[in-house]
Figure 1 (tube, one colour):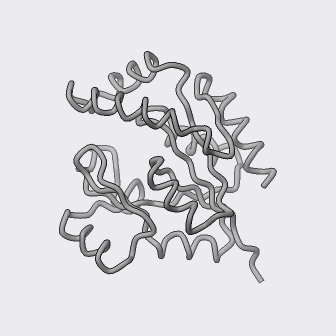
Figure 2 (cartoon, one colour):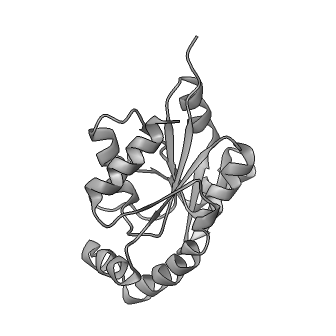
Length: 185
């Protein structure tokens, strides 16, 4: 019989490097799988449906909500985001350590349904460095940048509710700390 996997929730401000940290974790031999979430935000030129997100229309997403197919969902920065129930359950049943990269509201909702979930908060070294990272991505308008920074300040007030907080200043050090923690679960 397959051993049940661990659910690992990873949150932190937009631009803090959660996706980059996950990629480095998996490339450095950490046995984790990423839960692909659904969103209505437009696909970026380098993203693939079913790999980065399940890209849905607003109507499709609202149908998923009404049919109870999401463990959590949120409306953030003018788009829906949510975690598909089937994706999480299948991965855990197959024995995978599943990483959900979601916002603080989604993390709280998932923790209610999966109290055994291990919650990780990735924090930036400073708001100034976070702003630099967001600008460097080249995907933000002035208005969306301001919304993301305001949201980041709110999110960072919640980090004490997480099981583990890691600062992403030096990527290699942050990834090594997180890998060690996950492997000890």
